[in-house]
Image 1: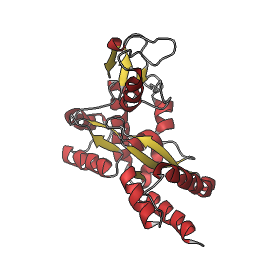
Image 2: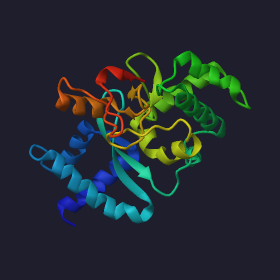
Image 3: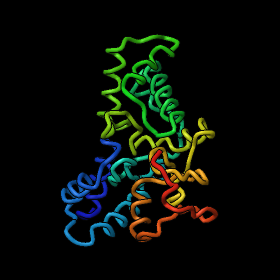
Length: 236
Protein backbone atom coordinates (compact mmCIF):
# COMPACT_ATOMS: atom_id res chain seq x y z
CA UNK A 1 0.00 0.00 0.00
CA UNK A 2 1.26 3.52 -0.72
CA UNK A 3 2.41 5.97 1.96
CA UNK A 4 -0.97 7.72 2.00
CA UNK A 5 -2.70 4.41 2.73
CA UNK A 6 -0.23 3.62 5.49
CA UNK A 7 -0.95 7.08 6.84
CA UNK A 8 -4.63 6.24 7.20
CA UNK A 9 -3.76 3.16 9.24
CA UNK A 10 -1.47 5.19 11.50
CA UNK A 11 -4.19 7.79 12.00
CA UNK A 12 -6.73 5.11 12.95
CA UNK A 13 -4.27 3.56 15.40
CA UNK A 14 -3.66 6.96 16.99
CA UNK A 15 -7.38 7.61 17.34
CA UNK A 16 -8.01 4.18 18.85
CA UNK A 17 -5.25 4.59 21.41
CA UNK A 18 -6.22 8.14 22.42
CA UNK A 19 -9.97 8.24 21.78
CA UNK A 20 -9.79 11.98 21.16
CA UNK A 21 -7.36 14.45 19.57
CA UNK A 22 -7.42 18.22 19.41
CA UNK A 23 -6.42 20.10 16.27
CA UNK A 24 -2.77 20.40 17.34
CA UNK A 25 -2.57 16.64 17.93
CA UNK A 26 -4.27 15.94 14.61
CA UNK A 27 -1.68 18.08 12.82
CA UNK A 28 1.14 16.20 14.54
CA UNK A 29 -0.26 12.80 13.58
CA UNK A 30 -0.93 13.86 9.98
CA UNK A 31 2.64 15.12 9.74
CA UNK A 32 3.83 11.70 10.93
CA UNK A 33 1.61 10.20 8.23
CA UNK A 34 3.52 12.18 5.60
CA UNK A 35 0.69 14.64 4.95
CA UNK A 36 1.58 18.29 4.30
CA UNK A 37 -0.48 20.25 6.84
CA UNK A 38 0.86 23.63 5.85
CA UNK A 39 -1.79 24.45 3.26
CA UNK A 40 -5.54 23.83 3.04
CA UNK A 41 -5.39 22.05 6.38
CA UNK A 42 -9.14 22.03 7.07
CA UNK A 43 -10.03 20.59 3.69
CA UNK A 44 -7.33 17.94 4.00
CA UNK A 45 -8.59 16.85 7.43
CA UNK A 46 -12.17 16.62 6.17
CA UNK A 47 -11.14 14.44 3.23
CA UNK A 48 -8.80 12.36 5.38
CA UNK A 49 -11.41 11.69 8.09
CA UNK A 50 -14.11 10.95 5.51
CA UNK A 51 -11.96 8.23 3.95
CA UNK A 52 -10.99 6.80 7.34
CA UNK A 53 -14.67 6.62 8.33
CA UNK A 54 -15.42 4.61 5.20
CA UNK A 55 -13.02 1.95 6.44
CA UNK A 56 -14.05 1.88 10.11
CA UNK A 57 -17.80 2.28 9.57
CA UNK A 58 -18.38 -1.48 9.08
CA UNK A 59 -16.93 -2.13 12.57
CA UNK A 60 -19.29 0.44 14.13
CA UNK A 61 -16.74 3.20 14.64
CA UNK A 62 -16.81 6.77 13.41
CA UNK A 63 -14.54 9.76 13.86
CA UNK A 64 -16.67 12.79 14.70
CA UNK A 65 -15.78 16.45 15.05
CA UNK A 66 -16.67 18.19 18.28
CA UNK A 67 -15.98 21.43 20.13
CA UNK A 68 -15.13 21.98 23.79
CA UNK A 69 -18.04 24.00 25.13
CA UNK A 70 -16.12 26.41 27.37
CA UNK A 71 -13.21 27.46 25.16
CA UNK A 72 -14.32 26.42 21.67
CA UNK A 73 -11.35 24.12 21.06
CA UNK A 74 -12.02 21.83 18.09
CA UNK A 75 -11.40 18.11 18.52
CA UNK A 76 -11.91 14.81 16.72
CA UNK A 77 -13.46 11.97 18.72
CA UNK A 78 -13.61 8.25 17.96
CA UNK A 79 -17.21 7.23 18.66
CA UNK A 80 -18.77 3.78 18.94
CA UNK A 81 -21.92 3.85 16.80
CA UNK A 82 -23.27 0.49 18.02
CA UNK A 83 -23.21 0.98 21.80
CA UNK A 84 -24.53 4.24 23.20
CA UNK A 85 -24.74 3.21 26.86
CA UNK A 86 -22.13 4.24 29.38
CA UNK A 87 -21.88 0.57 30.41
CA UNK A 88 -19.61 -0.07 27.42
CA UNK A 89 -16.84 1.58 29.45
CA UNK A 90 -16.87 -1.41 31.82
CA UNK A 91 -13.61 -2.67 30.34
CA UNK A 92 -11.91 0.49 31.63
CA UNK A 93 -13.73 1.27 34.87
CA UNK A 94 -15.24 -0.83 37.65
CA UNK A 95 -19.04 -1.10 38.09
CA UNK A 96 -18.89 1.17 41.13
CA UNK A 97 -16.81 3.74 39.27
CA UNK A 98 -19.28 3.72 36.39
CA UNK A 99 -22.10 4.25 38.87
CA UNK A 100 -20.26 7.29 40.21
CA UNK A 101 -19.75 8.55 36.65
CA UNK A 102 -23.50 8.23 36.06
CA UNK A 103 -24.18 10.22 39.25
CA UNK A 104 -21.73 12.86 38.06
CA UNK A 105 -23.44 13.15 34.66
CA UNK A 106 -26.84 13.31 36.36
CA UNK A 107 -25.76 16.19 38.62
CA UNK A 108 -24.17 18.09 35.74
CA UNK A 109 -27.37 17.76 33.72
CA UNK A 110 -29.61 18.79 36.63
CA UNK A 111 -27.49 21.84 37.50
CA UNK A 112 -28.50 23.61 34.31
CA UNK A 113 -25.16 25.34 33.75
CA UNK A 114 -23.37 22.14 32.71
CA UNK A 115 -20.95 22.19 35.64
CA UNK A 116 -20.50 20.86 39.15
CA UNK A 117 -18.20 21.95 41.98
CA UNK A 118 -15.49 19.62 43.27
CA UNK A 119 -17.07 19.33 46.73
CA UNK A 120 -20.49 18.52 45.29
CA UNK A 121 -18.87 15.91 43.04
CA UNK A 122 -17.13 14.30 46.01
CA UNK A 123 -20.41 14.19 47.93
CA UNK A 124 -21.92 12.04 45.19
CA UNK A 125 -20.15 9.08 46.81
CA UNK A 126 -22.83 9.23 49.54
CA UNK A 127 -25.44 8.28 46.95
CA UNK A 128 -23.68 5.09 45.86
CA UNK A 129 -25.10 1.75 46.93
CA UNK A 130 -21.56 0.58 47.59
CA UNK A 131 -19.73 3.49 49.20
CA UNK A 132 -16.19 4.43 48.23
CA UNK A 133 -13.74 6.66 50.08
CA UNK A 134 -13.15 10.29 49.17
CA UNK A 135 -9.55 9.60 48.19
CA UNK A 136 -10.62 6.77 45.91
CA UNK A 137 -13.28 9.00 44.38
CA UNK A 138 -10.74 11.78 43.78
CA UNK A 139 -8.40 9.32 42.09
CA UNK A 140 -11.26 8.21 39.86
CA UNK A 141 -12.13 11.79 38.91
CA UNK A 142 -8.45 12.35 38.09
CA UNK A 143 -8.54 9.31 35.82
CA UNK A 144 -11.66 10.61 34.08
CA UNK A 145 -9.87 13.89 33.50
CA UNK A 146 -6.70 12.17 32.26
CA UNK A 147 -8.83 10.04 29.90
CA UNK A 148 -10.52 13.27 28.81
CA UNK A 149 -14.08 12.31 29.76
CA UNK A 150 -14.35 15.36 32.06
CA UNK A 151 -12.46 18.62 32.30
CA UNK A 152 -11.81 21.35 34.85
CA UNK A 153 -13.28 24.67 33.81
CA UNK A 154 -11.64 28.04 34.28
CA UNK A 155 -13.71 28.48 37.46
CA UNK A 156 -12.43 25.19 38.90
CA UNK A 157 -15.69 23.31 38.38
CA UNK A 158 -16.03 19.99 36.55
CA UNK A 159 -17.87 19.60 33.27
CA UNK A 160 -18.27 16.92 30.63
CA UNK A 161 -15.58 17.16 27.97
CA UNK A 162 -16.24 17.12 24.25
CA UNK A 163 -15.38 13.39 24.31
CA UNK A 164 -18.27 12.64 26.67
CA UNK A 165 -20.67 14.91 24.78
CA UNK A 166 -19.84 13.29 21.45
CA UNK A 167 -19.55 9.65 22.55
CA UNK A 168 -22.38 9.69 25.11
CA UNK A 169 -24.66 11.99 23.11
CA UNK A 170 -27.46 9.42 22.68
CA UNK A 171 -27.12 8.13 26.25
CA UNK A 172 -27.57 11.66 27.61
CA UNK A 173 -30.58 12.29 25.38
CA UNK A 174 -32.21 8.98 26.34
CA UNK A 175 -31.61 9.19 30.10
CA UNK A 176 -32.05 12.94 30.71
CA UNK A 177 -34.62 14.14 28.14
CA UNK A 178 -36.07 16.71 30.56
CA UNK A 179 -32.72 18.48 30.90
CA UNK A 180 -31.42 18.25 27.34
CA UNK A 181 -30.97 21.46 25.38
CA UNK A 182 -29.87 21.58 21.77
CA UNK A 183 -27.90 24.56 20.49
CA UNK A 184 -30.26 26.67 18.40
CA UNK A 185 -27.42 27.52 16.02
CA UNK A 186 -25.54 24.25 15.37
CA UNK A 187 -28.41 21.99 16.60
CA UNK A 188 -26.01 19.84 18.68
CA UNK A 189 -26.21 19.01 22.39
CA UNK A 190 -25.51 22.07 24.52
CA UNK A 191 -24.69 21.84 28.24
CA UNK A 192 -22.71 25.06 28.70
CA UNK A 193 -23.67 28.18 26.83
CA UNK A 194 -25.91 31.23 26.68
CA UNK A 195 -29.66 31.00 27.19
CA UNK A 196 -32.41 33.35 26.11
CA UNK A 197 -34.62 34.50 28.99
CA UNK A 198 -37.43 35.19 26.58
CA UNK A 199 -37.80 31.77 24.89
CA UNK A 200 -35.36 29.50 26.77
CA UNK A 201 -33.29 28.64 23.69
CA UNK A 202 -29.68 27.74 24.45
CA UNK A 203 -26.60 28.04 22.29
CA UNK A 204 -22.88 27.41 22.63
CA UNK A 205 -20.50 30.25 23.48
CA UNK A 206 -18.54 29.67 20.28
CA UNK A 207 -21.66 29.49 18.10
CA UNK A 208 -23.13 32.65 19.58
CA UNK A 209 -19.81 34.54 19.38
CA UNK A 210 -19.63 33.85 15.64
CA UNK A 211 -23.27 34.88 15.15
CA UNK A 212 -23.12 38.02 17.28
CA UNK A 213 -19.91 39.16 15.58
CA UNK A 214 -21.93 39.22 12.35
CA UNK A 215 -24.93 40.96 13.93
CA UNK A 216 -22.86 43.85 15.25
CA UNK A 217 -24.80 46.09 17.62
CA UNK A 218 -28.17 44.60 16.66
CA UNK A 219 -27.75 41.34 18.53
CA UNK A 220 -30.82 39.14 18.87
CA UNK A 221 -31.71 35.60 19.94
CA UNK A 222 -30.98 33.22 17.04
CA UNK A 223 -34.23 31.33 17.54
CA UNK A 224 -36.40 32.16 14.48
CA UNK A 225 -39.61 32.45 16.52
CA UNK A 226 -38.04 34.69 19.18
CA UNK A 227 -35.42 37.21 18.03
CA UNK A 228 -35.37 38.84 21.47
CA UNK A 229 -32.79 41.64 21.90
CA UNK A 230 -29.33 40.53 23.10
CA UNK A 231 -29.94 42.23 26.44
CA UNK A 232 -32.37 39.42 27.33
CA UNK A 233 -29.82 36.69 26.65
CA UNK A 234 -27.87 35.47 29.69
CA UNK A 235 -25.10 32.96 30.37
CA UNK A 236 -26.24 29.55 31.67
